[in-house]
Image (tube, rainbow, N blue to C red):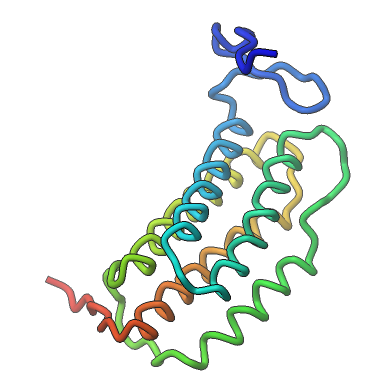
Length: 176
């Protein structure tokens, strides 16, 4: 069986459940940003040697895939639950005390892994904005927005932690 169907050649696609929408529909835009986020997390996993980080991000990737599926589905089953958000918060709470308190904005970058985590964080923020836009006209589980918001926090903390472990000094933004 070929991977191509030619159905989308005129700019349409089919959501789970059979509803046909334009490829520039807000839900498809959100699903696309979520897919980009998942791919970026895959890049981080490929570049890191840290087993704990790989495990955290592999579990997040599974959640992200489920978010995309939930957004594409017309069913009311909610895959993203408060428990998934609490898991992210516990991970953040376990890492944050190991970091210096932030008193300034930091410029994204540092080690290779931290830099890719910062990139993933910005993609996560875009995905969050796209889901917010899609939720204006579509019934979307509000836990998805909360999950993405918390995930961007986790990615920020993980990037900072990677720099700390590699003894890379964070670049502080002091204005002009």
